[in-house]
Image 1 (tube, one colour):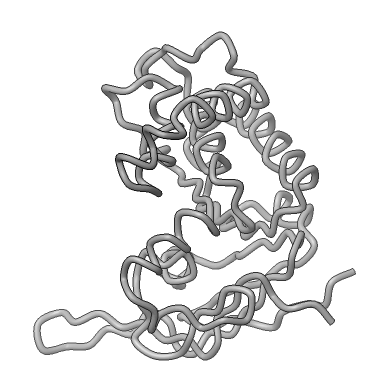
Image 2 (image 1 turned 90 degrees about the horizontal axis):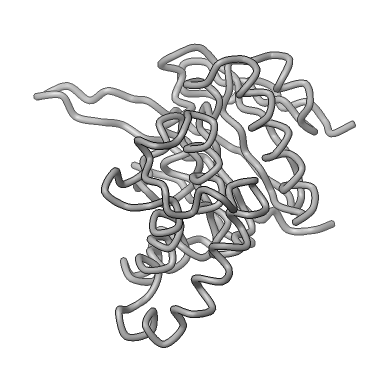
Length: 236
């Protein structure tokens, strides 16, 4: 039996509000297998985005463990966790998070710049640029390389974000409502693109969504309620 590429083991997460402690995650267990596509459903406030942030090492759990390839990671040095985050995991968010002053190409390259030292980046900048251009061509933006976000449609911005997430060739993509800010026709195109790339590359893919139809296209549907994972159906 293969090892999960990403897993949460009894993960809790609480925040302090004055003297009060607000629990958000209450002992979450979740395993994502290589090449698996999992939908995470739940009402607003259920803890879905918090779980993605913890799984992606953007935030630390209050207790429990996050494991990459079976290895606990939150006790690692900060620099090592950052390296894992940049190399292991790609993120796609609802609101793109593109830098407005940068072109599409520069926004994608930013992922490589952040993942390495300035000297290392300059040594490999030619290969990085070629890889970024190839990814933008794969998502249909070969003619929009030098356009800034304000010059792109919502769907085009999300395609830039997808290319940026893939530049480091991650094993896992975490997507938080990636079509929530798009009209239905544009969203359908973005979904087809994401699923096609996920299948081609054999990526593990965790998708937060409110869309039941979209969720049914995944291998498994996991539901969250009040910070707890509700029954995880077996893969069919």
